[in-house]
Length: 334
Image 1 (spheres, helix red, strand yellow):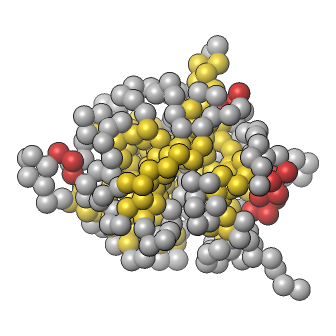
Image 2: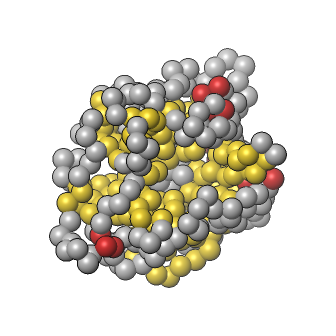
């Protein structure tokens, strides 16, 4: 009997995984080990959250948002055998660049909410950097030893720069959320294209907030997952309640060749703050997805998310169950 292959990609049988608990009816379920990375995981950290993970040499590597005890937003690298127990460097990443003092567009100023993806021959890192306001910093590494920073992708203001895991129509493609200089009270997902990871254009609108749970703003989460149905995009949405912001996660499916076209979009959130570690922390009521691992053989997907802007957690889903749910509960027609 052949196994249905929905995820287009490689087998990754050693990703973290926990079967759905008996009686659980959720499409995405939490790890019983949460939080897997606590706020004081390294001596300098005030909090470790909204971080990115990729397969690396049969194991796992990642870049981690580690706000220090002066509350600087900085990025550290880390390694893991199993994707759960992490050895995070105590020193931040030092990005190499060839700028002079006028080359402000290639300077690391601060770093938060990184993403990492392997494209062709290297790992690309994107994060929220500074250039007269928040924008998208870009760097690459071949080995997680040296990190080379190139030009920021955009003018200010922008956040949530998320690359697709391969070129589309021979161009690099990135999702982002144009914003402002503060805690942005708006936000929609756009897409941009580049021939060389330096010059970005052909901007297209992708999605705007639709439902009450996401009515304030939305932003891309982990690297999109290529499937036989299209690009599976896990994203976050923000509700402004009488008690402040509430960050939840959901998912959509984008067209495989024209990913600014939304084929399906789940109308409800799929995971939102419920557990104490998600509701209590530096920023209460946050579940913020930033990375995923997926196994094409079994259809398993592991999601890394930040909780309460304080700790790092894991959640799980199965690709066919998730896609079926999105399609059966979609606010976008075919």
